[in-house]
Length: 93
Image 1 (cartoon, rainbow, N blue to C red):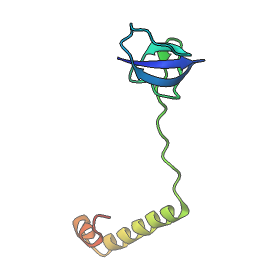
Image 2 (image 1 turned 90 degrees about the vertical axis):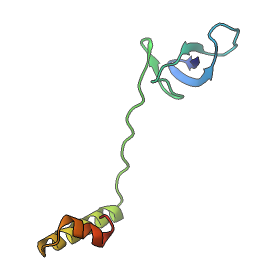
Image 3 (image 1 turned 60 degrees about the horizontal axis):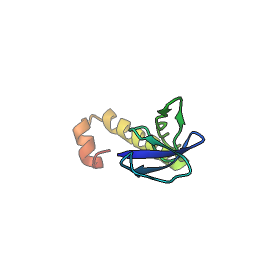
Image 4 (image 1 turned 60 degrees about the vertical axis):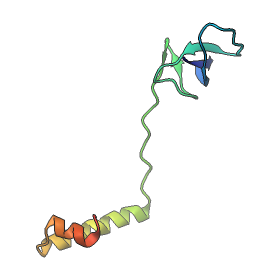
C-alpha cells in the first residue's frame, strides 16, 4: 500500500509500506489516496487535490500565428472553398 510521509501538513514523500512493519521516519505516515502527491497538502484529515495546471500564456508570435491562420481561413472561405478543401490545402489548419 502507498503511504505519504507528512510533515507540518505537507507531503514529503510517498512510499510503499505494509502498514504494520516497523518503519522509521521523521514524519507521520498516512495512507495515501489518489489526491496525495509529493509537495501536496494534507489538511483536516484529507489530502488536498492537486490544482489544475494552468495553460501557459501564449507568446506574441503564437498570437500572431493564430490571427494569420484565422485570416487566411476566412479569406479562403470568402472565395468559396469548403472546410475540407481548406484542410486539404493547409494540411489540417
